[in-house]
Image (cartoon, rainbow, N blue to C red):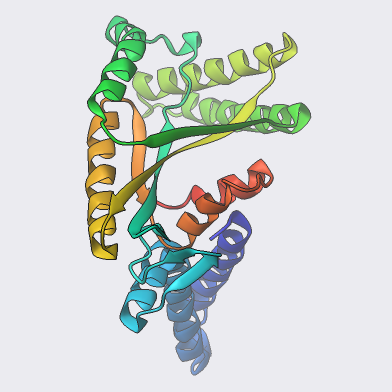
Length: 274
């Protein structure tokens, strides 16, 4: 589900909630408002889970096998893309690997966190040495529109300044809350200053692809699951959000081997799978 769909369904939910809240005085309309509210909640739930939960569930129940390209199949479990070659089955699976947010110096990183980041190259080398099967760690990046990015930062800074001004005038606001707002404003200002210094913002996504082999279809899929589990265990030492990709998102990642769509489309396809 992309951002546009979420926005439309979210507006539907808000309207339904308002209608349900204020329509009790209108007699029979209250039942209608309640029905609209329930339908909106069900619709949001279905759309949120459709790509990576409901879609594989339906294909498995109905035993649907998808053919994404010549000589390739996606079994009903929707957990891998399989190719049969010379008596062997090759199953390919995917894992999202969203890296941690970049830590700016203005965020006052602690000494322990600083040393942990410095150990990154050693952790990476040990991770590669412990994996005995083929895999790809893919990183896709694209420079974003500077003016649009600046406008977004300035809008967020303005909102934080408003929050800070309101919290500062509230006698019940703790100093911890004020310090946190100051830090967040300082970080955003550092990012704006970096743009002024010529730094270009980058939009990115990362994923891991691995391929297993088996003499039967079930063997290849079982081996694929074992490899995915091992990759998640190994790369868990990094600050990554590791989630196995299934359903229609898996097919979208499979297509990235053959073409590269716009970054906005890539991000919208995968950022909601948790």
